[in-house]
Structures are given as C-alpha cells and as structure tokens.
Image (tube, helix red, strand yellow):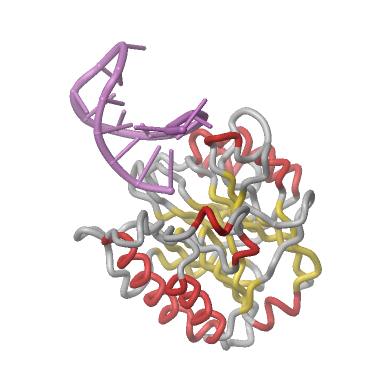
Length: 259
DNA sequence: ATGTCGTGGTTACCACGA
C-alpha cells in the first residue's frame, strides 16, 4: 500500500496537479493539509471519479485537512479532542480515519508565527492535545501514523541554514521537545529519502528562489507506531511535484507499506 | 528586497497568512 502526506496549499488551486499526481504516483491513501476551502466546496466528486473517497474537515479560507483513500475510509473523527483553539476559534487542523489496515491522522500543526507570539503558545498547546489524542493508538498493534505538516524541523539537519533560523519558530527546543514527546508516546520518525541532494526537505518557500537554491526544510513528517514503522519498505520526498507552474510550496512525502 | 503564492473582501487593489 502506498500512503502519502501533502500540504497542497489550496486544493482548489492544486486540483489539476493533485488528480494527475494521485494517478501517476499510484497513491492509495493521501493525508492532505491546507485545503483552504469548505467541506461543501471540497472536490469530492472529482476525486470520486478517480475512485477515491474523501473524509474532509474544512471550514473556509484557512487550514482544512482531509484523508483521501481508494482502500476505504471508516471511523472518521474530525478535530482533535482537547484542541485549545486560537483566539476563541477551534480550527480544522486534524482528521483521523481508518483506511484498510491502517489508521491515520492528517494534521496541520499551527505555524506559531514568532516565538513571542500567542500563536507559538497555541502551537505548543496543540501539540500536547495531539500527544494525548494519539496515546492509545501509538502503542496499539494496528499500523498507525500521524502524518502532516508539523511545522517543526526535527533537527538542525532538517533546515537549509540553521544559523538563519536563530530565534525563529520551527527549530526551538520547545517545539522539538513536542516531537520528542510524540516519540516517547510510541511513534517514530519515518524519514524519507531525498530524490536529489542530501536532505529530504519537504518545503521550500515560494520567495527568494528557495526551491532552485534548495533552501528547504523538512517539516512534513510521518510519525508511525512500531507496526507501521516495521511495515515501511520505502519512503521518499517527491520533489518533482514542487517544480513548475502551479506547484504547492510543499512536496508530497510518499511511504510504501507491506501491509 | 518586504523578492511569492493563495484567499476573500473592502475587488481591476488590499490585508492576511505562510
């Protein structure tokens, strides 16, 4: 089975590429983030024509997550239990579902904006709610993974220039400690291989020619429990999908499982 | 360079988020 995660940065803007990519990559299950649309306007019909069912949690121009599957979708849960919300609003940043033999969460972790910003506090609180939510599945016998845009680079090796990220979000000890907590809960980082260059970056800012210069970050992660991790036969970042006109600023992370 | 995208509202530009 082939499972992937991809921050599409608007499913409306990305639809032609998304449909083509699903077919060309042979992906069975996709966790997607930043749908940037409502559940009503989500292109479920177009995906259904390709044989995919969609489970969607989306409310408008910001955020929005989904699981798209051609191996079934069951037991859908929309939202994170205990989600702290931001500024009084609980945002659509998490959805979980069982797709064939695997249970997955598709997550879009808050960005944090700046270390001194309230959004950074929200980010850390949100991680704690995620940790609590996945505790049972993380130690279970069924293959399970949290997949998505974590907005944290796990190590300095996961950013193109650690020095330029001093005092920035995405690399702070507290954010990395949140990832450590997820690993201590029973998950492990399924690190994909890069198709080019030395680092499996998954995100390159649209600005400043970051992609051609390979100024990237690995912030789209696959955190799987032991049964999931043991089933992994390959994992890679499809950087081809970051190329050209109409690309998202994130590339898909693709994982092959023997399940 | 605050260098690019994408969205929706206050629309043939702006503000916001990333």
